[in-house]
Length: 225
Image 1 (tube, one colour):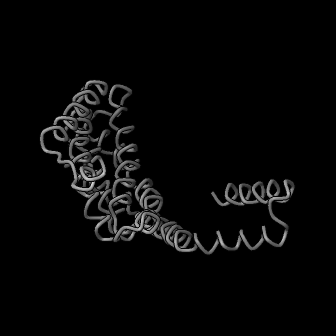
Image 2: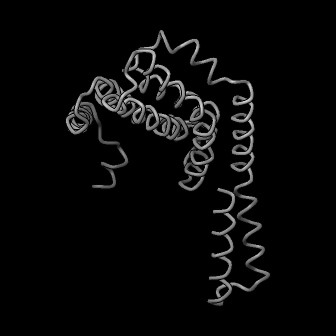
């Protein structure tokens, strides 16, 4: 990630200077401006890497495996991972940090649960894949809803909306989609339910909720008139 960021910044600087868009001095100033804007995100990411290193040194993955491998149902592991990732990202305000913290724990834990239940074979690999995907999805979900997330703050600032109102109004939509995803996709998928049918049923449920419980805002009505 560090090398990719450096290469991207150098490429952008070369293209900007070679096309005469900015001078060398202006390009450096713009780069420093970008660094300052991303400083908080970089601090959070570095701290997340540090926490991930600490969990590795403490053998957190082995501890979780010893406690949960025999008691956790393999089919429900992806749903549990989604909830854990969502809570972590919501409370920390970072999706990348959540992925970095939990991914080294989730993969060995899921594999140990499958092994303890005699399911560590190609037929049940979809549970491992789903657990990995649920870590990513839960992290993004929690980051999207978190009031301390940099993307949430920037979204409310860019749209000129009160920050708390922005968080409060988007929460019902995110909760509905997350609930439908777990109930119709993640949990049935752990038991081998076809993903295509889950997508169709989930889309139909979301449409039905929007159709029968959704309301047109007063602002939309006034604009249409």
